[in-house]
Each structure stands twice: as structure tokens, then as C-alpha cells.
Length: 156
Image (cartoon, rainbow, N blue to C red; front, side, top):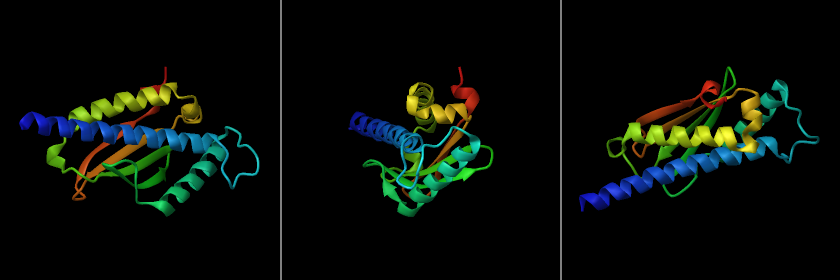
């Protein structure tokens, strides 16, 4: 019984991590792809990056909250000073006490850094040295952890 509960928690953590990765990949496609409101392709300048990100933040926050997967709810996204993007998520099926925070952060950081380094659609973020912050809350709204990914973590 205890082994089954451990496997269930591991599955929930993995699904949460995969959901976050899919979400970031989706956002990167929107930023580098064609927005319906964009009349011409955006240059990779800081001004265009900030304009596109502000539009993206606005669009996502209009739709929030929404489910990323069965365990993860997207709450909001914020564009912060210094090329920083903060995503806030809720683990809707878990409490803080059910999560191995260190293991979840380590596994998620490894996966996200690899995604940022290798996904061609993340190039605009790499080029503009964007920092990412992922803040997680549990189903009761209690803070679980915040994961910060900075350019020095994903640059070669």
C-alpha cells in the first residue's frame, strides 16, 4: 500500500513537471510563431520581445486559470523587470506535505534547462537572456516552491 502511494505521488510529480514543460514549449511557439494580431514578423530586438511578451501575458491571463494537465492548473503569468517571466501554477491534487520539494525542483530544473538549451523555439529567450520563475502552490493555496532558471544556467 505504501509503495502504491509512493508511485502515485511520483506519477503526480512527473505529470506536473511534464505539464510545465509542455506549457513553456507552447508559449515559446507563440512568441516565435505568428500571432493573430501581428501584421509582420517580429525582429529579435528587445523592444519586440517585450511587446510580444506583454501581449502573451495579457492573452494568457485573460484565460486563466486553466488546466495544463490533470494535476496542474495554470494560474497566471507575469512579465517582471529585467527580462524575467514568472509562471504561477497550482498542484490541484496535492498538498505541500505530499511533495518531495527537493526532488521535484531538481528534476524539473534539469528538464527545463535542457528544454531551453535545445528547443529551437526557445532561441528568442536564449538570445534575450530571459529568466524564468515557476511558482507552485498546493491545492490549499499554500506555497510549495519557486524554481528560478537564469541565463547562466542554460547558456553554454
